[in-house]
Every structure is written in C-alpha cells, then in structure tokens.
Image (cartoon, rainbow, N blue to C red; front, side):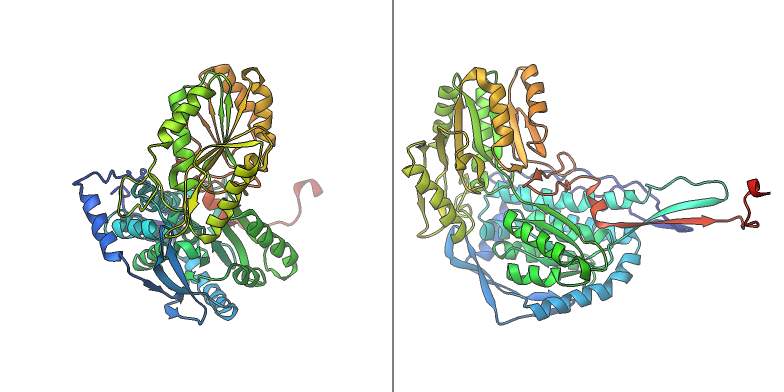
Length: 556
C-alpha cells in the first residue's frame, strides 16, 4: 500500500491552521491477480464466502440501523436468481430525520481541524488498500457484474486515490492564503457549506459513490448518501470502512431511497446546501429544476454538481496506427459491457483504413468471452446491470436489425434467461446523424460511420455537432498537423480528450474527469480544485494597530 509520507499534525497561529508536514501520495498500483498471487488467493476466498449469500443492509441514520416496510433486493446481473442484498428504502419521514440529525452535527464537524478530517480518508484508503480490498472487490464483481480487472481498477485504486488525493488537496488548500499588509493579517478559512450535501451515486463505479459521499466531508460537510440500488452491497462496505476509520455518526447518513422520493425530500428542505450527482440527464435536470423552483426556501444558493454520461467518440484519421485503433476501441467500447460513462459508442473511420480496421475488430470480436466473471476469470465482460438496462439495449438492437440504413456486422443478440447478457455489437451506419450516433445507449454497442478520407475536416465538425454530450473522445492520427487541427475543432466536444489512446481509463490526479454540455457541470473529480466545490470560504482580516482617527488626511 502507498502511505502518506508523514503524519499530519496541525499547528494554530491566530486564525490560521498550518500543516506541519507536506502531504505526499502516489497513485495506488493496480494489482495483477495472476495465477498463484496472494491477491488472487484473497479474492477467491472472498468470492467463495459471498457465494449464494444475501446481505442485509439497513438504512443508517446516526448510529441507528433502521428497517422500513419498503424492502428491495439487489440482484446479481449475471445470475439474477441470486439476491445479493436485501435492503430497504428510506421514506420521507426518515429522510427528514436524517437531514435534521446531519445539520445538528454539522457545526462541530466543520470546526474540527482539516488535518483530523483528512486523516479519516487517509486511514480508509489504507484499509481498502489492505485488509478490505478483497471484500470490496468481490462485492463489486458479484453485485455489479465486473470482471477482476474492472473491479480492481474501480473499487481499489480509483477509490483509494479519490480518498488520498482529495484529503491531500484539502490539507494543502489551507496554504492558499491572501496577502497580508502592514499592521494586519488576512486569513482564508475554508468552511464547509451551511446545510447538507445530497450525494446521489451510480451503479457503474464503486469509487464514484465513495467520492461523491466522502469528499465533501473532508471539507467539513455533512452528507445524505443515496447509493444506487444495483451497487448497494459495495457501497455499504465503503460506508462501513469510513465509519470504522473514525467518521462520526451523522456525518454521512446511508439512506437508500426511491429516486423521486429522495429528490423531492432533499430539494424541499431549507437546509439543502449542495447536490453531488452522477447519473442520467433526465434525473439531473429534474433535480436542478426542483432546486430552481425552491430557491426562495433555501438559506443559501445550493451548489449543484453533476456528471451525466456521454456519447463518446473515436475519430480515426488515415494516418492512424490500425492496431492501436482496433485494440483501443475494443477495450473502450466493450469493457464492462459499455457501461462506463466514458465508453466509446461512436466511431468515425476513413474508407482507406476501414477494411483493415473492420477485419481487426471482427477478429478480436470472435475471441471475446461474455459470461460469469466470478467462475471464469478469462471473461472479458459480463451481463449488463439489470432488466431495465437490458430492455433498453434490446430495443436499440431491434432497431438496428430492422433499419435499411444500419448493418449489424458483429453480435446483435441478447439473452436474459439467467443473466442480462448482451453480445458485443458493432453496427455500420450510413447516416452519420442516425440516433445510434447521437443518443446514449450505455451498453456494448458500437456504431461506425465510414467516411471519404478527404472529408476528414467535415467529419470533425460532425463529431462536434452530432451529439448533445461532451464527456470523452479520442483522436487517432500520426499526422501532427491533423492532431492539431482536430484539437481545435473538438475543443468543446469532450472534457477528457485523448490522442492515440482510448476514450476510457482516466486516472485520479492524472486525468481529472468530467465533461460539459449534456454531460454535466465538468467539476473534474480527481483534480486539486474539486474540493473547492464543497467549501464556502470566509476571509478574516485581523488588525493589530488601533484606529486613532476617523478623518482622512485630505480633510484637514
């Protein structure tokens, strides 16, 4: 595990708190899980212990575990006969109780030195890196249908990095201070927001849930965390790690809820200070509209931060390296069944390279194994997350088979008898503005438009204007002039932009993540400025020389 170089101790001078040691952290290494490795042995043991088990997960308000009558189940995507978790929805009354308890705890938490708050995240990161790693990975695999490597990347290094780097950034932010003047000092106090933050997390990354709920707390905030129904088991494990590492009761309330009930309740509370969201565009718009409609009741203007997915592109120029295009696109489009926010789902290929790229894609496609990631570690990806997702993707596949302008060149089948399985599917489109090229599908479906080589400049405009999203995108070209042209043409088409690399795989502190347009508010979690979203600074001027005259000199 990677530890902080030195223990954090804060000293007090006037209004300022100074960390006595620099905070140095590094990205958590990704483990290999090769045959015979310690990490593989630990993971297999954790998977075996969870096999066929149903975990009971209550709502947690303060230290009280609460069960309501509205009981639900999290099902394993690749074996929907397995009830992974039994949980319950918090009702309106319980949510309001959680809000009041959080607000009551806020002041004391906000006054706690940032070093003490950060130490909780540092400790949680070490625990996840070590003794809890296998358990959280196993719960992510079984509950969210991830393969070994996808669970490892998400639920270990990314989550660990979120905790460590955001704690580091929170501590180091204290050194960002205004200028002093003769006879006085000026101090910036980075207060938490006055009220509570509502965190709404998605199913597809365990790390995102930990970040959305955990990071605001290091800045002195209290949080109501609504985890995804389909990531309940792993989310609860992360919550328990935070509590075991010293997070006091009432700082994060763990409240699974029906989406509209949660949204209606938090946005109608005068204490709402912020929303930290990852999910669909319609849900985010609904929350934003509710906040706007309720502005007159709030004590403050709530901060609204959201990430809403994308219609991510791979643009290929005639000068591109074909092997990089093929391998990068296979990974981006089909890892985790295309359910990453950053997954490539539309591709633009020049006619001169299409035969080579098509053959390369089809050759790899024949080797892709879709199945149970727990029983077979050679599985490349597993089932999509749930019945609703399966049905949505199936409609797109039916549309592709029935349209004269669309040609399914690989895959196209699906089967939900045991799990929600969808084949990796590649579709060639004649119309570059077909809905398949503009609308988010969130499944293992890649649409390809083949263009005349000389039209690449017009195609860059197509890439920029076809979809309302602007999350991630990649340009494959060896011609440096084309790389420069594309960067200008696609400046606003993606918040995370890759050159000769796939559109997925952002790493905390290396590629802070997020996009604009319909993809969200582009607050870049994983960057040092992200913590600024969750603070309401106060500037304090302290003067040491008494003011002895009310008149200005020119008045004499």
